Image (cartoon, protein in one colour):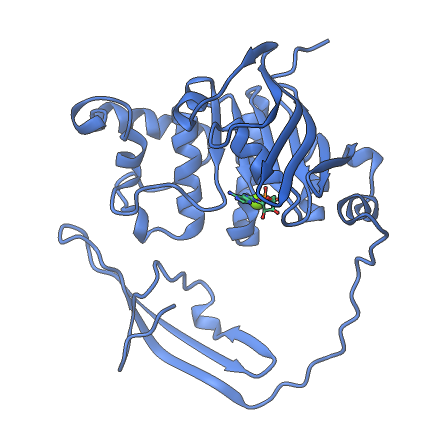
Length: 313
Ligand SMILES: Nc1ncnc2c1ncn2[C@@H]1O[C@H](COP(=O)(O)OP(=O)(O)O)[C@@H](O)[C@H]1O
Ligand SMILES: [Mg+2]
């Protein structure tokens, strides 16, 4: 039998007034996508933060490749081959993609030499289809690009077991497709993946194994070939769930907000070209839509919209 890449046994974590994890067992094999499924508050992130050395469990043990380990910090987790893509990204916004990758790898100011970093970054990026400009400042990137930068950073550090905490929550459907291609490549390379989601169609598409958490406990273990979306939803909430909703057609009212000929000015460094895009949006009550010409407009950052008076976006 294959030795599990990860074996978490009897993990319990208590916070004041709540048992976030209550005797949780989780086994991940090499080359496997293992989904952690559960409602908000089920204890998924807590379990993964324990694995990543952010929390210490009150009870339970962790084995990596059959060897009992104690993981004392994220740096320790990385040393032991674990990477984690958090729900809220951890990159330094004022540094570039390559600088974020280099950060903490030694050298002057704790940053490795950029030449070799960029070379290897290009290789990793190519191998896993994670395309992002290594010289772009993080704060200027769209959220999907930031996520790719986070994944690159973990892969650059030779993560063999990668945790992705609700990675699709911030992505557009095409970006989800791209992410899945990347995850499949990692899987082919024998990496173990822990994928956290509560989107059942994604879980059914991607997973090899599924562990369902409810109120901090494992409520079920299954795999897509043995489970239906209804079954998964029932394991998540503890009762049968109606997955289709019948919503009566909404009446579209008068325009509530019109934005026209909007300029979005990238706050680019002086040595980069300035960019400007026009946007137009029409919002009527009961609907939100973008004008056709602006469907692809991707606002690069918060509070970058200029107008008669600046607005937050
Ligand atoms: N740092 C914390 N302090 C106190 N309670 C926490 C903390 N982190 C999580 N919790 C609680 O633990 C439970 C599980 O949370 P979490 O692991 O974030 O769930 P999930 O990721 O499945 O949404 C929730 O009730 C949450 O409020
Ligand atoms: Mg969470």
